[in-house]
Image (cartoon, rainbow, N blue to C red; front, side, top):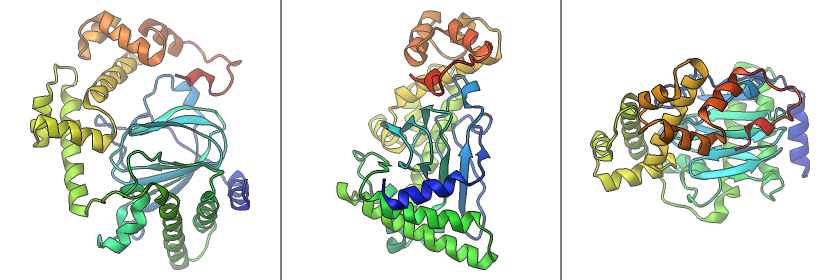
Length: 335
């Protein structure tokens, strides 16, 4: 482990943790909104998830219209961002692309990341090409490149060093003007090192601000429509019309934007709603299948077991049963 990584992890071990729970914060479109300061749209949080093991089956997959990265300060787990699914451990830095569906799949109780959220305006308020180049680790990273920088990678040292300076500027009190300037300085420094760290895979052409806004508006319309009609027979031509595209272009758009195939997304959304009803109601599996757009009870049972590894009724019983105290941290949530 390089010195910068050791220093960052040691600093974070002394910082207070902020409890975060995903339940109730993700809307029907799977969008997670956040309010940012007007002067510098940046938020930093050292998070903990003490209720995670109680949230049996809680679907963490969501998307957002801002940038995010986090570094694991402790604990291991498994994550999905877009089409990528990967393991993480202490020191690993994970990038979350705007509009991509993402979320934790499995984690140990010790997982406590330092998380940064920011809007593009914090870096490129006018949308100038030179300023947007600081966002290259997200906007110009080839799709084949994993959005994770391993903690023991040669490029991780400078990234961790910049993260430590940014964290100190956020958590340690100082005059408001000096604090804002220091935050902006160290954020840009961090993004510069991330650009270098991910440059090895080459770059793809980045989107303009107008192109990104158009993509986001289409995605919002599509996911709003799907949220309202997923219990029905949803035909792709109908959804494509909502997006203002041909069926073929819509398939490409949805995959490029979220990282998921549309059919996979629709199936997962229906399973999520079925799981919620199993946890929160006493309705029969047959009724839940009918309400959520499955062909029949056996169709729901087959897909549910493929995702959760247990039948719907076993899932309901598991959720209602008190958490087994002897369960090793993280084991309950392995897929």
